[in-house]
Length: 116
Length: 111
Image (cartoon, rainbow over all chains, first blue to last red; front, side, top):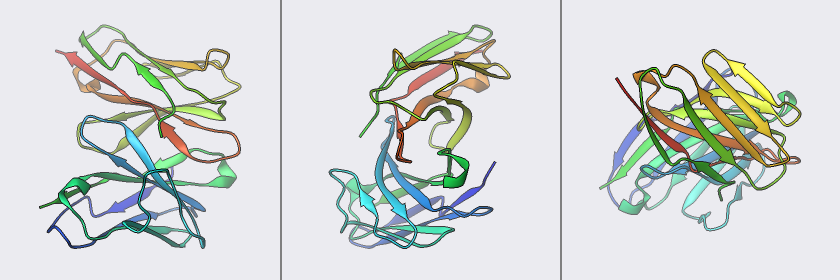
């Protein structure tokens, strides 16, 4: 299967700082990437859909100015949590889709963000 | 947003027993996938079943799909302690490529 690499796997940051999470498709071109957030013992909630070269589409209730998404190339999307607060602490997971191969999405290993 | 419900929310069984988890969804789909997630870790893709398929097998896993009822089930046979994890169904809607997850079932297999 296709490989999606997410970096970092965990990060601790101070309140008020910004954190960038990278999602890379290593062996295929991903026209679309997705960002999810997961709180402990809960399911994955879709935050936004990112298409290469265009603005991300955010789900209802997700602050686009807080969670900046950039999809500058077919192999890289980034999520930046700006001015992080303790309530932003969560598990963030990306996935990448190869549209020519149907809608199966391939997931990164996730990033655990802790804001102190 | 979440697509639907999973049932049960939690399941505790003895090693060797079968585990059945159900998933219901709300809209029409292209395909449905099942994933496993160990505590605090990433997702492991288990199986994909397309909307025109009714049943699929992979090792000890058996997945069924009933599009008329908008439901799917995942059966794990001869469970092992290592199967302890959360299991999620996820669906892709026609015309879009968003993968939407169900609430998940937490499975605990006692050795």
